[in-house]
Image (cartoon, rainbow, N blue to C red; front, side, top):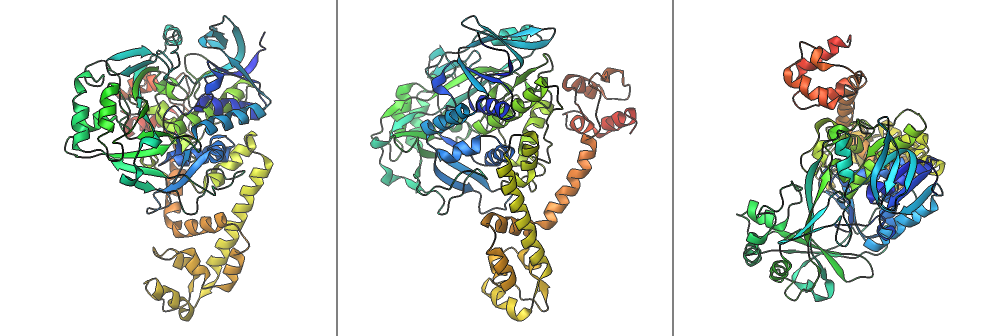
Length: 620
């Protein structure tokens, strides 16, 4: 009944949507297989995109030609640039989103992609012949053929939901778990594990007293995620901040003996950086309060997401504790928070393309790889989609390095180091974060997206114009000098040391308290040039000039490291036969099977002397 596809994507969450969209944009035939067509791109947890390091990932997805940034902008109800008080390497865009509109816009985007077909059914297994995937089997008995398959199962594999002492199977509230896939993959030689995540209760916003909370506004001049086809918000909805207190904590503690977190019901590992409220109280017992963010779920709903109150305690305990928080005294709960355990597959079983090592043509993306977060899932979906399509056409794979993108850092971390707890991206995980800023993602990656066929010529041309405008203004400021008489008037106002002789305008921008606007006011010619170019190019010029020394230093280190990443290691190398390798290196490298010397150097337990042995063996 259904034709053979280049790619079948199983699951229509953030990873699945990006994967299917990418394959279709590249011209591949793709089937998006989902158990429920009504929950495509559902925001299962908080109604927000981006944040620290995550915002950089969304910008990178957009620069490559993915959909998450575009959809986030169309469904945004608030925009904030986080960490503005720090350097630009830390600036991170974040949107609060309309949950229903987000899912609706993603579906519209996929439906406009004529290469994407949809089928509502549950995948119960993959079809394999001679260690290669050839399709999938569904619960309705269909066998659908494909050259490659991407599993983006989220929390559905043997999902188990916990609310107090209650346990019931489910991929998320109201949806069935999926059985059979894990067991089948184990029979092929895969290893699996269990992880846990959770979500907070949702409440009726009409029952809250916002006068007892701090209002959190969006940016006065909001930006946006997408570099290309969207517009900034003209109106925004506020979020609110309140705090738990000792009375809240005591009420929560009364239910600890019924908490699956503490009574042994939950044995798997949860996200360290997004703990449940009961975990916070237990681990940080000296703190008398914890921050709670009250986030609207959309433009036209009263439902509120209670960020910071993730819990799996009994419903009545949740309700009692909530009403002891300022502003929540008369709160009405729409639905309780819960924890969910699910199967994942340690990502060291994957190659750099996210293809599994056990079965050719089978790719994993998202929470099945042990990650947490919409953004982490989306970028994996994009990369898996691209590589599954390229694999189906026998073309060279597409891989991003650690110095090219946060996406490269994430995938390299997963396949090289693995993870035993839900992996979340942070700026601290990237050693080249001055290079990997959110503002220059288009400059870094748009050419790659365009060359692949993901990014349109119009979008690519827009980036080229930005690059030319930036270079033009940089050269003007680097070339033009300014006399003390003119400069010192502005420098004194900013309490910056006066100059004693003529200097280049570009040198003044490197001063901490001097902005590009200050410098442009010192020069009629440069100011006139700046009036003809975009604000993005002016901002880019300032960042490049102000941090020029740091950027050059990181680029130099990245080039040195890239030499190791260019030395390929044969996939069938028998490490146990290399006598001078340490025992630990032999064991770890035999499991990971790194593709390059650079990747081998990042494997835990592999020492510099082990790398020297490998280099000698490789004739280097």
